[in-house]
Length: 590
Image 1 (spheres, rainbow, N blue to C red):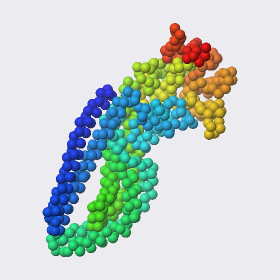
Image 2: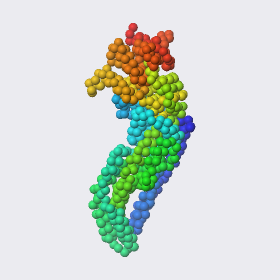
Image 3: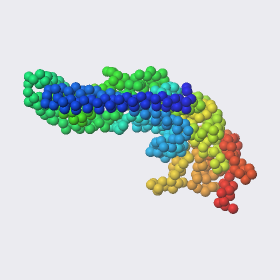
Image 4: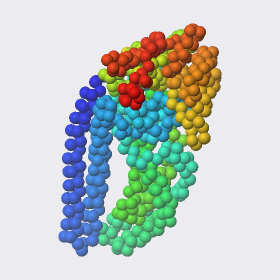
């Protein structure tokens, strides 16, 4: 695969050149429309009085004008796609430079009751979600969030295979995302499906036949009129009959048009997305399975949805005075289109949910594949079934700049528990979040920021950022006890990898030390694996009595009245603390 920065710069150049050409074509088409309009005005002026000739000129120019509008809209859509692709490549270059704080941060998804989301900067400003999310659809974002929070340890190698393939198809992935981003007013998939499922037809069954009959009569009358064989009164009579029939259903047609207008952009872009999916032949099992769901028993889903999109566009054109009045009066246009829409709904409404799910799947996996493409120096964990839960060489937090981060190795076996001590700011919390996020990413099938990694799949549970609850009138200490109870209850039902940061902060030092020790003993008794960071060195004594508990630390050194950190994860117990030094250094105490 290409270097990401080189690729994005090449794409920017290519799309900018294409965009310039499309702008020229749009200006040319606009000029043609203006010229055509002026020709129509001039012809009407010079031939005024000759009704037959004037009507003929207006009809020909109207047809040509509609053709130019259609062509203009096609080119305009191509321009919009190029603009979206430009924006995506510009965004990727920014994010590679860690400029992503203006993106959606997913704060609404943070949940203090979840197994880990509150503790590891998964959502919020500067979060992993904000960094990696590229979904363009609400449904795709919702699925991506579910994947982040799922704690699902099944079929990880299948997930890896799918992400690798999406990463390799980076141009296709960008095209998919660009088209999805053009959904102007996305109506929730559930809302659309509910409307389709519960829709009740109102157009008469023979509406299309009636429309065809009136169309034949109208064309015949117009031909006879131009030949001078019938008077304009007969034309006007046909006009009144057609208008009367349409008027009978006008209220219901308007209601249908209002509903479809809300989802019109969604259906139009979804049809193009399905077309993209149908054109691709995937190899990864998960991608093949997702793609297969879009093939209905009757026909191509893209073709079907494109047909529906065209029907919705046609219905939307009823707002054009010329089309709305003449089309309905002489051809019962609205009735014909509404009947076609109703027939489509009855035929396909059970298939639409599968199509929407497939699109959401590829939108979500587009973000995962994009992340993998951007981080080609990351490694996919080797999935094992051994006595070791995690073996990682040179692990780094993916949101740290590589040149600033200090990599660390860790090997932790099943049922092992590490007590981690260290001075303030020495790197304990960052290391805990690094390992926690690595587990989450591994379970999703993502590559992790490390030189090498092997991993026996495990679910994650944490207790690192407990807060008090004014709403529930809970103290900090009681909230923390509830969280620790949640941890115990969870691992009694099913093994989880546990990460704890300075537990029992809401009580005095003696009580905290005794309680923390007993809590670790409880976890060890449940054969739990995990990490706990603490400032309490007495907790390290647990390792003297329990074979599965080991001590590790991060060190701080004071040299020439300056504080230095090496951020290295080492076996043993921390000997230097720095609170008093920092208080003195900042002139807080003497």
